[in-house]
Figure (cartoon, rainbow, N blue to C red):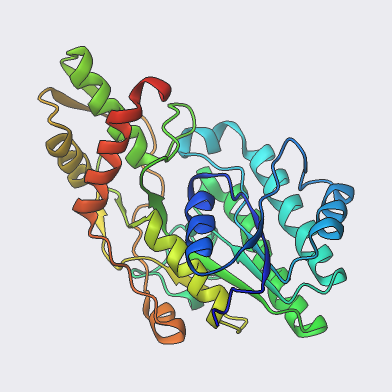
Length: 315
């Protein structure tokens, strides 16, 4: 009998980029009772809406993926909104999960919770050694409070709440909107669109010196499901690949895979964001056997192919 066979699961953000993959994988794992609240019907910032959701669904498990999120530009323009929305959603949902006797609460944090100058690779024990990178600190700290709440609720109430830290995600059906997308979909859109329009160049923010680590969305979903099933400890857990790539090298690879032949112009007046990112992924492997499987090049190819096919609706 599958662990998931008789479980009722609420997946907040289940209609989003990561959420759709989590829901699909839950179904493949044998879960037949999945509730995906939609923001138009259920405002997770409002206690009454959360109470109604849990009264009607009575879940055994909540996987909290919902977030208000964007790239560097969007974070710079919406620090108050990103702090408030993410803080209120997480705090009220976990509190009501406790009140309703939910057996498992999986909180999805963010790599932006780490200090700006965290030693590389990022170890979970270093989460509190400094302040996050300024452009996304309000978002990162709001999500970081879910870790504090999960640990406090475990200690006082015995709530089986876990906290996962996925690195930057990418994959098909990502957010390609220019004003809020992250680096990979933004670069793919620029290159594919420029190739189709015959543009001679694209402009990229920053210097290209910053590094990032990226996790394919299918791998991230699998890690979340494995942790929800098998992990029951207060310590946070990184989900990543342990592979660091400079933004300049990322741009070169996307230019190659999309076939864009023009010039790349670097706008050094725009921020690089956090200088380096690479995760120590030892804990995830040791605690519940998670290891990323999709290679970076293969993941990028799949993402580019998806965008090329759906370009007209993502313009």
